[in-house]
Length: 339
Ligand code: NAD
Ligand code: DAU
Image 1 (cartoon, protein in one colour):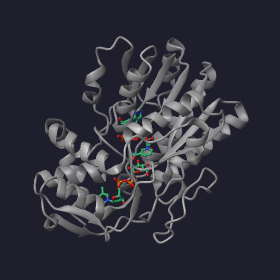
Image 2 (cartoon, rainbow, N blue to C red):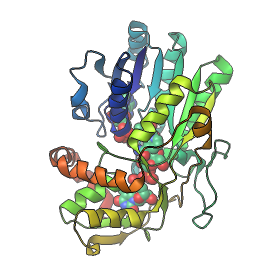
Image 3 (cartoon, rainbow, N blue to C red):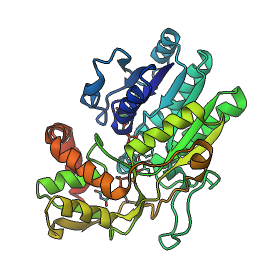
Image 4 (tube, rainbow, N blue to C red):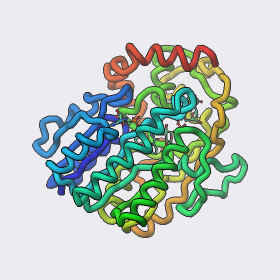
């Protein structure tokens, strides 16, 4: 089987490439990425000599080159991770989110139809459901929860989901969608909560917690997410949506304090800063459908997963130094100096 993985040099995409090469060594992976600020070819260093792996630098919005690639490679499965993925950036500058997340999806689906791809899989997010009240701890997102977005990022991802379902109904595209909760693990760009806090703490820099730190996220180890996508894109029913999540809900402040403790620092580093505009209160996934239909179960619990993840960043400080130099410093100054 030949699989196109877009956004393959980003956080989840790169973890997925390793997962696939290990789990299905008979398959061929074409890893595509534009290498934006979030894409790092070094994330894929560990598979560059694998004969079943090939990297292509390309923009998913570039219809002409995408069509050429599809014509040459004749993919069986396309799995689309490529996206602008950071909520705070979408609040500063929404346009690129619409172009990449919506138009890019359309270009990939057009090529999938034209060149006979057997399954198009869209990697989506629980953020398309909006948020849940903090106090309603027995309420969860299911696949039938109405889409109700908060940020330009989540609106662009929900738009893409609707477009994927429209291509299924109108043009008969064979497709599936997964909607996962917050991921953590190796190779996450340190604009996101966990690697940002680890990076700041290792330099004894202030840890900027938005609002009161009481918002809740439902954390899933990236390898469990990859396993879920792999099952759905191979065995999931055509035209279906599957939620992925492991019931690991934590207040942000608990996550930050876990990192502080693991690194032997003190809570004095915490600084409460201006809240994110439109900040979603709580995410919580009901994963019953993927568990019962496809037998998916997470392997990690949050306590062991976060411990291993913190260790990974501390053992890969060169990677962290590399991605937090240059443009990252300008980004950090722009986003956090006003808070
Ligand atoms: P990321 O920002 O780390 O990676 C995105 C990758 O896409 C980068 O390598 C970037 O270079 C690439 N890219 C961006 N624009 C492109 C374009 N026009 N053409 C080709 N490549 C392009 O993001 P991530 O956290 O790995 O998320 C991957 C996917 O998973 C996204 O679709 C995101 O919405 C979804 N998702 C993420 C999470 C999470 O917690 N991180 C949870 C659920 C779903
Ligand atoms: O739920 C899935 C989503 O999870 C994905 O679709 C997104 O691509 C991914 O970025 C993530 O979105 P969040 O907004 O939840 O993740 P982020 O790491 O940006 O923030 C997590 C929480 O931590 C959120 O409540 C905001 C808060 N936060 C974040 C940062 C960067 C802080 O308090 N301080 C910070 O500096």
